[in-house]
Amino acid sequence: MAKLYFKYSTMNSGKSASLLQSAHNYVESGKSVLYFNAAIDTRYGEGKIASRIGLQHDAIPYHHDFNFYEHVLEHIISVNLPDAIFIDESQFLSEKQVLELCEIVDVLDIPVLCYGIRNDYQGNLFEGSRTLLCNADQIDELKGICSDRGCNKKATHILRYVDGEIQKEGKQTIVGDQEYESVCRYHFMTAMEIYK
Image (cartoon, rainbow, N blue to C red):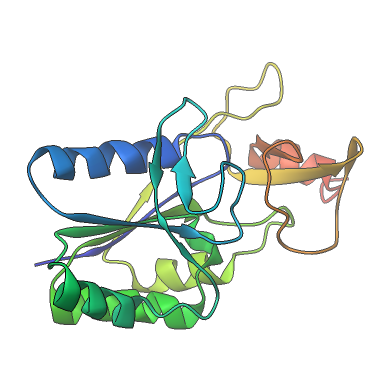
């Protein structure tokens, strides 16, 4: 039976590299794979899944109105039945899209593996992550290390900087690497002045 997987972590923990490695294992076994990435993630070019260690693969970009179920049905009719579906930056999925992925798993019996960030720079869940946490058959945390020097705790939160200043409010999403830092809960809470 196929499953819906959610593999999450903070930034710079190897999510995209892990996705590409897992997808490569399918392809090396002669299986067919569909790759998707959020259309707003253009750091390495449109329709690319890329890791900081240099791995990359073309992907179908999805936007907020993209219908995964219809796209997969069209793919089945015109090309073939994929053996697995891999989705990067899954925090940007809408609730409706996650439910479409559930339908792909339950009705079409295709495994769907989603990789993304759990919470934003304010410590709040992304819509896609929240819906995946509620509906995934299997949830795995990919562990990263706090970027604060001298701290070896697991990174669980993200800080966002603009011109070197920590941001405590504003737009939930600004795509990029340079403005963000992955930290443990303690360093997040002290930086956000939640701990006095």
